[in-house]
Image (cartoon, rainbow, N blue to C red; front, top):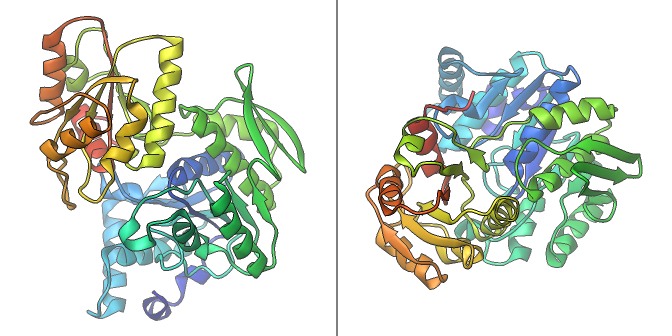
Length: 408
């Protein structure tokens, strides 16, 4: 990265001030909240996230707008020319292209989401971010990051920079210890959720408190208790970065935040037409055991408010832990319909996925795809169900394309 950046004129040093976000779960939602709050305050924001769901352009947002094809192609070609045919990964190339665009277009803030891990991630060349942010850490990408929370946390903590603020969501004790050591090495205190700042729900509102005071805010637009924590992490990060924002600006941002395929309601189109009459259809791209816990918590909350039989339609990549993902749904879901996942990464065979679901205590069958699974639920009759399509961002992208709901 530094080699090619130098050939490009070091655009990473010319970008607007950076907020750098790592973590296992909640990175994208926290970035979405950061962007929405900053834009509600009138600021222009660059955003780099991954992966995309439907359109490649979703990864690069320049001053509030997705980069168009021509602009993105030109930036990629410049990065390729600067690389001069030497070894480079796809993600490195995309990060370089984003940095070129961010350096050359005016904005007030740059939001960088880590692609994988942190310490060795392509985004981790920014020397002095406004703040380094660590969202919830759990087991995922063990092949690259290690098989323990401590090892994974060490990789995530690699984005911490000397003298720059560090904000973290609430963490498990062993993760907290790793982050404390990283912050100490950097010579800064760790601003930890549940300790230096707290957030929760009270009477349908969100209450955030830190050394800067108490904020009584509307509940985030994004669905789920975990989204309250993600929103709190975003607010704590903005405070640590030195932004002075009113409760009204923060509240308007939280009410506008959008992050596709995170407990997103599918309200129309061919999927709803194929589903049982009166069914609720939800989509979530969570794909690791930690995500399984929080998504199961969301559907349990939905069931408390409006009971409906829950059925899952799931597809997963071969590299994921399906039993760990499914286990929190035992006792909540009545069935799992296992479907293939297409794309540039190998999907888990639906028969293997069904066996994993059964091992987690869930009845499971296989189907050719989501539409076939929905048709089977429709043919079975009975009470109008709640259906959750889950297990993979790749599957989520297929669903959004099929539903005619591409992110914008």
